[in-house]
Length: 241
Image (cartoon, rainbow, N blue to C red; front, side, top):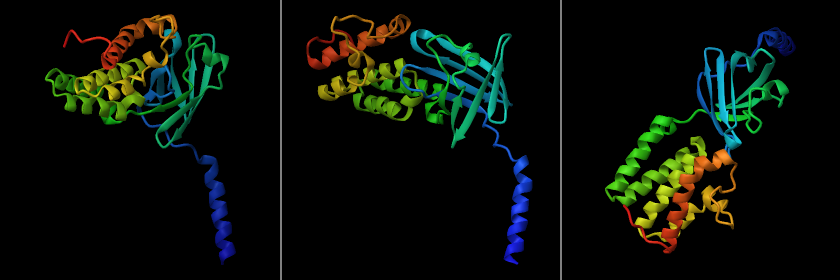
């Protein structure tokens, strides 16, 4: 009896296997979480995908195509890029095999291979803008503890899904808030996590070790960070609000 059931089950599994296929990828907007200075998005909708990423020196990748199961296909007049999509509990990993066909959709210093995740509701672009506005409003009203809480919670919950320059800008504003709370040590500890401090050059240059386009985009944020560091060290006095 047991042998008969086992054989029947095996036959059933064998019959189902050829028709089995990966679950469809979930539609939505995903954020590139490659880390470093790369950023970007992946959008999946109705069997189509769109990828847009920015890498070093503002080089970018832009491509769109169709999904066939867990494979994406993007074509132009010269080549066809084939991408494998792997879904691990909502984290999508894209692998192009670094093929020339896929590289043709990118600048020399950009890529799109790697992991993408959907931002939680509290960390969508709209939510981040709203939360940042609230923290700044509390700062303007000199409610520094509430402002610091707002900035810190934004970093703790959403830095993975934020552009690297935006993340450093929030850290700079948090540090300035901590300065006004009289906590200079924590101010310096917060700023120590920024690119401006980690990449500080001995010659005092304002490129912060970045390629030209990245340096231009980061310059105002980097200068604000260095100014706030000087405030927290007590080497300059704040002259504006």
